[in-house]
Picture 1 (cartoon, rainbow, N blue to C red):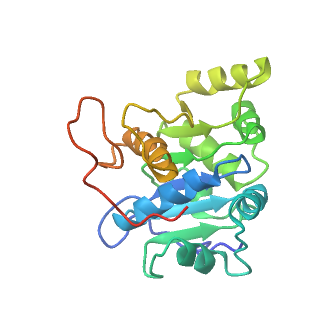
Picture 2 (picture 1 turned 90 degrees about the vertical axis):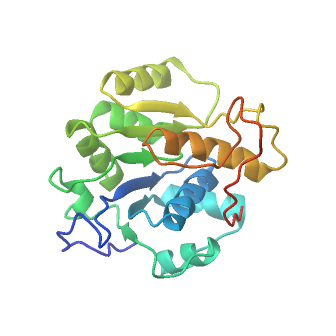
Length: 225
């Protein structure tokens, strides 16, 4: 996957918004990351997207999707988004990419979903690819970093890694949808998790019925799982 903006020095888009970094790694549940990107594009939030090879394998296994050489075009087609949306993609081997530098300002970073391997690398301070580096930059710049783990159960090593990241300032979340919103579909459960991720960064959303709300969500974007 080639980087689109290795030479770009622009932090703000034309609307004056800081970009948001999304990483999709090789844990089951890539749909959470894709739905997150879809929502952010629908509200015109600029996104820098990082997707690992393992995540591409998960997408193939779970959704029969193969994006081909033009990853961005394939993803936008699947998410039913126009090619004019503010999405930039990066190669994980491009250490000259914008997100590799702390001077590139962002709203934060979400790793959705976060594999246990990525969890361990970030907790250990390793920077073996651009996802690890971008996460390390987010932490050192005191920006919000969220990791969404999905696997269960957790071993002692994974639990310690989560504590390490929490102590370093990261938000550790699990892909654990609730049921009090009376979900009617798998999409409802996906939106519950994605909505809670968005909450951690202050993105206004009505993707799910919140506790004690009387009505179903009024926000109904196009969804494709």
